[in-house]
Image (cartoon, rainbow, N blue to C red):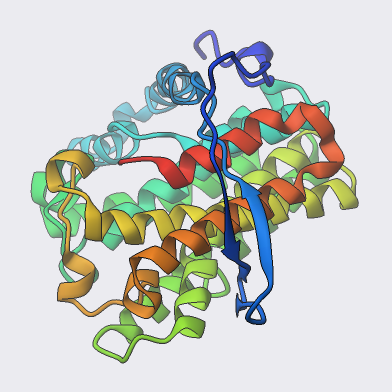
Length: 341
């Protein structure tokens, strides 16, 4: 394996001078909707630390090298399938879920070396989900991260098989490359539940079932919690398990990931309405065209932004017990909501 991700690469850093922030009052939103009228939080939604984006880019570059090395023993795999798997897994991306595994492992005192396998498994599951999500039978997308989607670059059958292979490989890694058997079982159960019908796949099914139905906020919240929040929560919990976290710390990390996932998906909902294909590297205005269940469709753009800000606040609150050691993850939550792609 390559140099790998050093522990210092994921440890928090002090905020730099000149980091802008703004403060405003909004109605409380939560996973269950809007609180009683007249109830407000004052939320300090600081912009992400100036180096948050750069830190993620640096991490993604180094993690990419380790992922690439992981696929090198694949000479015996059918070449077209191997190429499609590599195309899906090694393409450009934020590697946010993998970063969360590493960062949460470090936060509870774990070693970065123990985070690689669950982080790689998490990225494989995420890549599988994107390949299948882009298929004509699902969201029918031609572009992903500025490149042709897997089924456009290869063909539909190969894309389906590449997604299947990535999902299987994720669990093969957890079963064979996690040294501690108890942790291997715990990680496998966490990722399987977050991926399956109680998690991301169930959320995708609910998303498809909700198309062309009247906007329903409760339905949107359920879709987002499963389709996006489940894997974000699992990423944080996998990092905690890798680092030997106790039950209370795992609960806090999971809560952070759950609220972070909601903020991330609300931001995605908003970007589909407010951004351009050039900025996003994928099609825009598709949610409205397919009458998908989204926050802007249910409550409008401004209240969707408020809901995202409240999700950021709840993500930060979940980390309060970790003190300043988690400051960078608090900034990351703000970054997720303020991103432009």
